View (cartoon, helix red, strand yellow):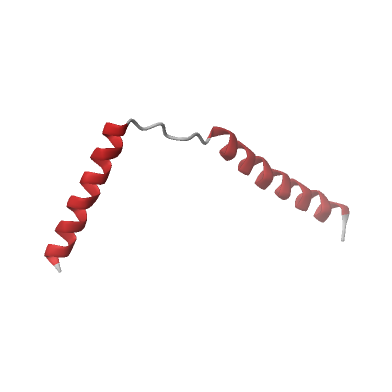
Length: 55
């Protein structure tokens, strides 16, 4: 393998690993209140009911 191929391979691996680390660092957990969680569950139940009625 030539030097150019090694450099390109190392650069590609570095870009991929760097991208993964940036995504990991910028990701954060959602802190939902009990009210927001209840609203989400209610909305999901309504959507499931609508889908069931359409079938």
